[in-house]
Length: 195
Image 1 (cartoon, rainbow, N blue to C red):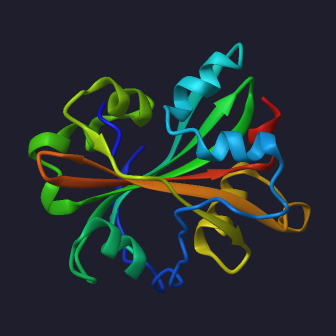
Image 2 (cartoon, one colour; image 1 turned 180 degrees about the horizontal axis):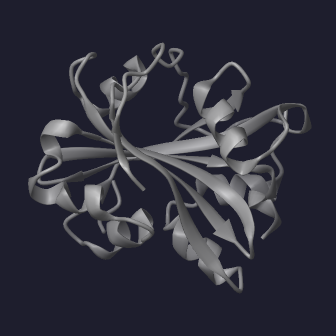
Image 3 (tube, rainbow, N blue to C red; image 1 turned 135 degrees about the vertical axis):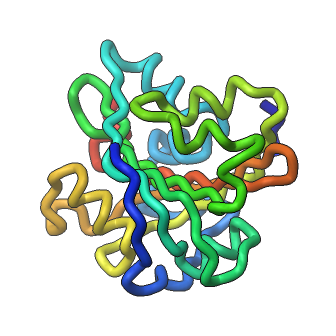
């Protein structure tokens, strides 16, 4: 790669808050270990596999939805356009480490990204980093709190009480192949940095 469940249909209840996804990861609360995990531009799947004795992908949802405004902008699609959404937990050594939320414009589900709808329990990251025709745009970062729908989805999926994790770190990037865009957002759960 160059650097650079069931199917459901749903409309987002409210558009995601206008996100401030930053290109640079500067925050005094971040440890060097956390910064290393968040800013590593390699495959997160590969890194988790290397540091654990077991690894699994648990598909939570795969559905058609309307992305939030900032997600539509990242995908370069119209604000009310439909997209394929996939949400999974990346589990290492039996512990949920990362909640991943991926989006692809519905109109791009055929052609170069047709694999997206058929991933099943396979990790998307492994497919993305194995294809030299796929380019990745720079990572963006954000600290999520209980006001953000991705925070709420992540803690609900991992079975974490909101009070035990006042915020979660997330990163996202856009992958391109054949001029079509796929957005992947990875929310690091509290145990993510323990491996």
